[in-house]
Length: 362
Image 1 (cartoon, helix red, strand yellow):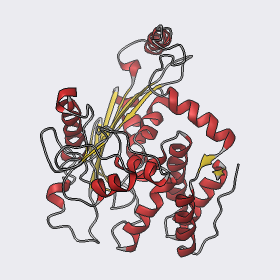
Image 2 (image 1 turned 180 degrees about the vertical axis):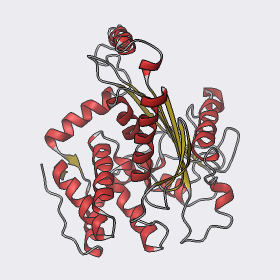
Image 3 (image 1 turned 90 degrees about the vertical axis):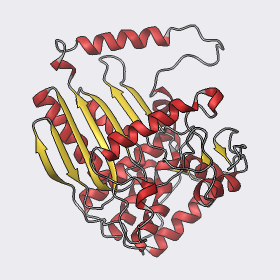
Image 4 (image 1 turned 180 degrees about the horizontal axis):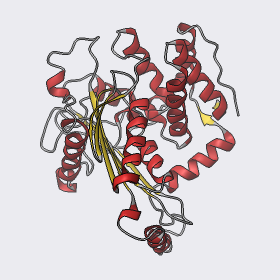
């Protein structure tokens, strides 16, 4: 089916509220998840409900938790996520960073005691909408990335997101996993019976795994192998992706005192929170240059990039954020693809939450 955006929002909201999440927190979480699905990032939208249900069932996530400032000084703050879902905590932290950037020129907010926060790109877009440059990194729950020359996974997908506002051009928005592909993107392709591109997933000997079910098992179940860092192989500079992942973890988790998965899992019980950390940075260009000058120069840079002669006329040069904006427009008009396996999954979750199945075709 191709579900309408309104029905996807309503379905997520109904389930979260039935689970006991306060209405305002559920509304923000649903908005982040819907925007992610509309942008074509199927790995971090409504499909995440199954994971959240499992966390709720063992008492790991506190859905009624409200983020709070643990400590602050000047342009810097530390936020305690209260062991809740990461979406409200990350949104709160980025808004706080933007507020500090407007006061001090820059705002940096770290989050601890959080959980999965969806797509990092949503939070940097908040900064861009406020006229700020935004940067986000995060720690992770899953050990999925096999470091360069390694045989077992140690790091996660450790995302990095960046956004910068233009004036007549839409913002430049980069949202990337530091693995060749996000773990949930592997799961999303498997749900859609699509093969996994060679280089995304490797076994313990470094061989590519391309069957969907086998790749999901390799990433989520087996102790060896997993996702490759950006670059794929040592010959293709996978050490750069590995280094970026470590940087994202240091800013996103070490800075706030949040957990590092290989250490946490040694003592973590099923009901213990993941204690994921996030990092939010907002920069006000007006602290550096007269108002509007940064945006005008960014527009000119984007103009030059878009005008680059393409190697293939059918594949024009884009800037980060273009594919997601195009997909957002297409899915807003024609609906969000919900494959049969995911539809069945959502029906089961809705039934267990004692809410109706609300997804309808656009």
